Amino acid sequence: MQYLVEQGSSHREVLEKVKARYGDAAQVLSHRTVRSGGFMGLFAREGVEITFYLKDDSVREGEKKKADIEEEKRRLLERVSQEQAIQQVLSEVRSIKDSLVESASRAAPAESEHPTLAAVDALLTDNDFSSWYRAELLGRARSEFSLDALDDYEAVEEAILEWVGDTVRLPIPPRAVKPRVLVLVGPTGVGKTTTIAKLAALHNLGIGGLPAQDVRMITIDNYRIGAKQQIETYGSIMRVPVSSVETASDLRQTIAMYRDTDLILVDTIGKSPRDAVRLAEMQQILDACGPSAEVYLAVAATTKTQDMLDIFRQFEPFRYRGIVVTKMDETGRVGNVLSALAETDKAVAWVTDGQKVPQDISPAHPLRFLMNLEGFRPNRPKLEERYGPVARGT
Ligand SMILES: Nc1nc2c(ncn2[C@@H]2O[C@H](COP(=O)(O)OP(=O)(O)O)[C@@H](O)[C@H]2O)c(=O)[nH]1
Ligand SMILES: [Mg+2]
Image 1 (cartoon, rainbow, N blue to C red):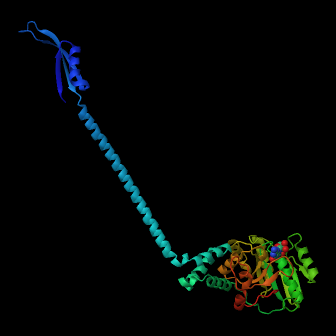
Image 2: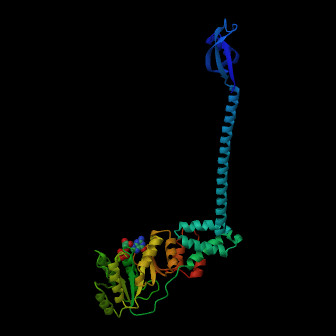
Image 3: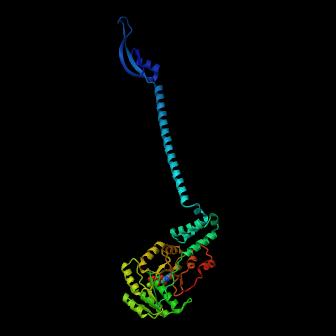
């Protein structure tokens, strides 16, 4: 820093001089009184001396500018590095995305994108087929159809319908015994009693190519008010005797009493499958029906796949030979039933599709399900060629 000195006769005079020469740049540091002029110490005059320095504004301005530029540069660099970091993150995201897309396309081959398969999958979903069942069908289509062949939607649809039909398994015909004892189990309200009544009428009258048989009905559903009356009403209309039993030994005696008849239909309690006491009781009752008794499990077609699987499992102790799918008339979607049957490899014995006794029952047949699928166009003659004609009655 540069220090300067100026003298004058008064403080004010010196300040004015300094100001005139250096303007606002002069910054006073100190002042003192001095003697000036005269001769040999004589006639000297008293004056003022001011020490000051110049604020180098230009330098400071330059310095300020430089500092500002430095600051700006720093900010810029910071922004650039932030930008670079963002870009890096973005490029990483992009590469993750690319690898995901790549692995997805590797997991599901290009064929899965084929419009035919996409359309078929959408139809299957609409029909309530389980994801497991859909994956099975689409996997098979991918392996059996070339990319070009997939362009033929009708051919793929036909194949899918056949594959679905092939999963409908019918029970092996039972060994002929006399009397044949047929037991229906299942959750409450699915239509056991109604189904028993339908079967009784058809066999008793000999409808649908069946010989007229000597039929009996036994009910153990004495718990629900009106249940006994319900089956007795059917019995009196159809002239089929009905017995109501309370215990397993009652049942054993009643079956023994009916040993000369052709068919004994046993209607069971409609208790929840979660009711362990009732299930244990039922087990005793089934034992009383004898080793050759045929047990069937009734489930409503409107039941969700998972619930149906639960019911299948809960009634497993009764070693049922097959399923009776009831209330088919109440739903246009049967994919849930087909999925549950296929997943557990259960046979399906009868299908019921209404409340009318005895008309609304028929033996299970793949076409009963295939003709019920929404959005598909099953070729009936062709399917009948494969599975045989659909019969009414049992
Ligand atoms: N829509 C329809 N209703 C049915 C069918 N089967 C039975 N039902 C009705 O379902 C209700 C319960 O039937 P029920 O035989 O008493 O059931 P259970 O408790 O299993 O013996 C009754 O109103 C029946 O008329 C069917 O196939 N379709
Ligand atoms: Mg009942």
